[in-house]
Length: 370
Image: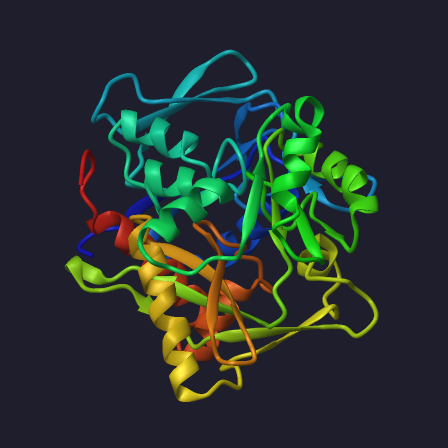
């Protein structure tokens, strides 16, 4: 690039993944190449307020459990006044408004609803603002596990058998829901349709546990997905968009080994709290044929949803070598222990270079319809 670009690192948000977003942002801010990029850190509180933060995030607070959160510090980010004008402003504590200048690209490290689901992407599209990652449709479909599976099935991509329980159905048509569930095999996984980081996910071994599992999922989303538990190895593959129309790239497939006896599955604590809970094997020990299948399905999934920038595709590899797609994450965890950057590091792209590549992919992408 001929000149330094200004990057707004945007994080926090209104979803239950707020603290993970804060941890991710802290990592990115430490690793972003300051010789190439000027940085503006902006946090979104759990109530939806956009606030200007210190570069070192010293004003990010921690709750009683030690998890970080963005607090309202009295500032307020004001969006550009007109389409095509990327000049953000800030309303200071003293009531004065000052300009933050032109923002070349927003790096939206916001996970879950109201951030990763197309809502934030739509806002940025309205003001012709470039940003890292998938657009509105890909973000929305990738976030909603029901529609994600419908789209993937339409493209001939194998997915786990599932039943969707729409808002109010469990209360109004319990018998009908149970009839549909009877076609699935135990164990079942009950999960919010539009949440990530394994929030609200329960493993159910019989119908006796269904009420409690649905209640837990409903804490995060009125729409719930119930899936057949697949007996197979859980494999992940990181996807990175291609330059100038080139095909998307894939990392070596990676496999997560969960600490024996500690966890029933790869849940929130295993992913983000307990550093010793999971060990990554990358490249995973797969035959060349199966590894090629995983990488091919990862690109096909990424392409079917119209993703851009980055994505992590999770699959199951069964004993007979059959590969089934579990889900895609269009803004995967990006903490130092997250699988997306770790898989790319094992493939040959360091964290710092990965951040640069994602920003440059966003900078070369046009605004508007594409």
